[in-house]
Length: 424
Image (tube, one colour):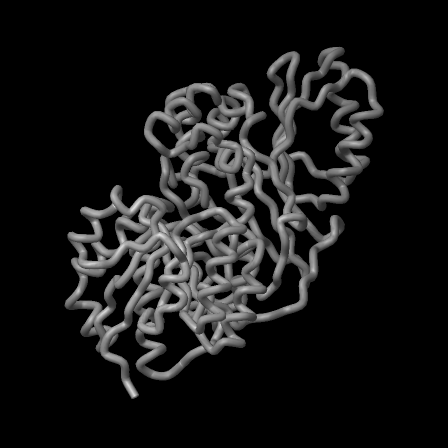
């Protein structure tokens, strides 16, 4: 039996919440033809009813101050969570699911932390729980991984999934800005918060890599499984050297499969200027996928913003409307499941950029080469910036890298300035 109207309640009318009713109205005819249903905002939960009154009047929905006004309303079919944060959002979503409401969320922190718990509850209650907007804003990457690439074997996912740091690194690469100058620019343009910790320390990107790894490999990992390094310590000198060697710095979230284990990390990395990700600039996001059948593919677009993110939220609402019409309920967003298996240091392989200060001059170059050879790391390029040296290597295991770093620590005359991965 088909239901002609899907009634939606939105929790929070901030940047994204503002965009959802706008898109539903603008794309009304297309949505109704696609779903054979009307999708309407019936209620919105807000702290201050007076502040949002004009928006509610424009789009003809009711403002309420209490979550009970939504979860206890039998006419509400879907709850869209857009309040952000973790604990309060988790409570509200659980209340909605327990009331047999479908749920849509854009909350990557919550999904990465409690996604499995909420997915299990949704399945138990025979409702849908979708969160396309939680990763890369307007890029439909999760549905692509779970549906369009479901017949393919994915073995590498590289993501530029934080617009704040990408804007900052673009300023540093293209305009020679320092870290502090780039951060100030991002804050003035509204890309960075007053406290930018989650962005610049790589935490935001790491949450997204938790979700991407789940969809790519079916493995539930936690933030503790991810090696995280932000951009605070990136030196202008390394940025200039990278540019001279035909590389750019990007904050790369990567999830790669080695044998049956995966390695997941977030860190600044040198990306060759010929690589597709090198041209993803400013606040834009992109996810680069390598897979057995298709090969290489990239998904590019705005990673944030009112309308791009709201478009992903509305896409989830459309999917729920279609599921309701066809009585396809309780199926998880991602049905691919495998036991978690992390790759070992012996399996993980990367190309590396090493930057040293050689304290005793050129006589130690040969000693440096000997230390690389002893660790069985092959040198691709060695550049003398007297008294500093930069070494680019061929792919070597993380185990060999650690062995080399240990030997450098115990060898006088060398100071390691930085080390980063390279993506060609």
